[in-house]
Image 1 (cartoon, one colour):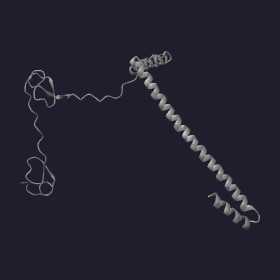
Image 2 (cartoon, rainbow, N blue to C red):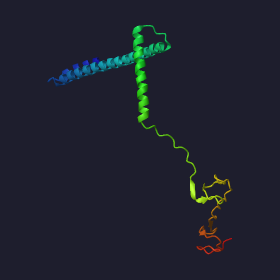
Image 3 (tube, helix red, strand yellow):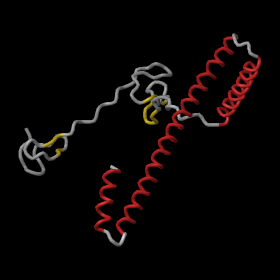
Image 4 (spheres, rainbow, N blue to C red):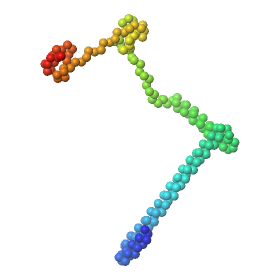
Length: 180
């Protein structure tokens, strides 16, 4: 690409007697070189960042292995043992703080216990008079059988126009047709 720019520069110098095009081309070359330098800098920075991340992962893996050896009781280097004991102390402090937090922090919302059927003030045992749970078949106090509530009468509708009818109606109040 730089060869093309060089040839273009030669052609332009013949056309450009005042030097303005040459100046523009020179400025363009400088900007391209600066952009290329920045691209290289960013590439190297990205590689450094990736290497540092790999280093951190490797150190974490090494630390985990050393702690595992300490917990298994097979670590013998005193410098590493003292560091691992420091980690043990920090873990103990974390447990204490977590326990304290559980005491002062409300526990997360727990599912509500299933609702127990509530007594209905209108439902009373006919034998002992105690309030019983609505829908119960027997009194929970004396065991007497309870009278089942009668279901409400069915709602009737006119077969001709769909209008609602009262119980026992012989004619539809809307269309006047005979009710079968």
